[in-house]
Image 1 (cartoon, rainbow over the protein chains, first blue to last red):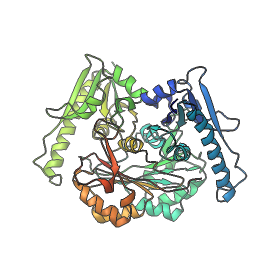
Image 2 (spheres, each protein chain N blue to C red):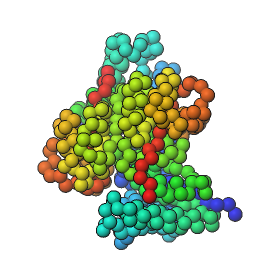
Image 3 (cartoon, each protein chain N blue to C red):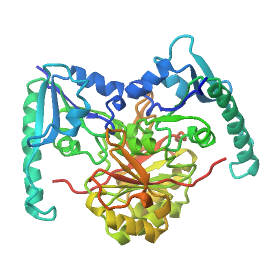
Image 4 (tube, rainbow over the protein chains, first blue to last red):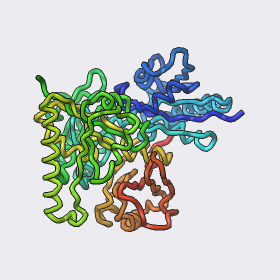
Length: 242
Length: 242
């Protein structure tokens, strides 16, 4: 008996029609469908594929440990996640070793800031893997906003909002186009960095891009600093336009 | 009679199965399908959608002017492209004004270095537009290579290979992960910049990612500096990995 194949399946930015044809084919036929979720919740990944999963599919939710009491900087946080990924890896390995293909659902693109990557590096030397790329969350956001991001020889930089104000401002000064991810609690700092770098008036705020409840506005029109973790700020490039 | 709607349809990185479900739906139903091509050629965009276009669809190839004799820096080059985009815009506007929806095919994602953008900025105030995001060429390449690009709080920078050696090296030093586009004639310079910044041994070369003739190797294993314009170099990030 040969081992199963692991599929990392990109789901795109949230609209179920933005799965690729290949992603749908794999999800419709995979013997086991695994996905990350918080305990007691269904999870966004599972919700996105609702219309594509066959009735009676074998589903394997991977439930994140509860870490709300532990600061990210505490080694115990890292340790809790490491144990979780190690245990999830062995659950998946058991299915693969038994000859069953496993599809792991991954919001956006599997190899771009995806939790899937932590399982991937643990399994890729042991089993055959196929990655199905997906439309990134940021591409969903700039399409929804109608922001043409990069022109000609523009440089584009993707920045986590967790960086310091100075690091953000310095990176913004050195790029043509920028995407700032992980807005959430970093919102006020991101606003300051955009003012520091002179990009504030061009910045666009996108929340839940391509999904129900989508909000798109100029950042300068957003009256408060309240944003979900996955909200994004876009600064489009101004390069060559014949 | 109401005017038609313009669709900018992302086709993904080249594998026809990497179109989104939404892109296929629009292509199967759009009264007019427009795409860029060189005179005498079918064009890569049109080839990617071969299996999805209905027989008898109304196709509108937009043929780039021949500019091989004109250097990119010559104002005549810009002028030739401007005239071409202006004329293409009027052809599309005539269809839209006559009430027909038009889908413009765009390799990768429509708003990420896409020729579509030159038509989009000319038409978006005159007609209703919907953008269908696509899997970018770079995501197709890193998935094909199995390169997990960005971890935790990694910064990722997208750099055109047309930049100077010093500008490339400086940007590489300041980022965690990098994608270098437009390799082609810039290959030798890109190699030098990667050596300057200390990323040479980690760099991955990808040619025709997700397509027939795909080539993936460590950059240091590539014996020559011969590459097509659309080849890509990847440097993956090394961020937080519990």
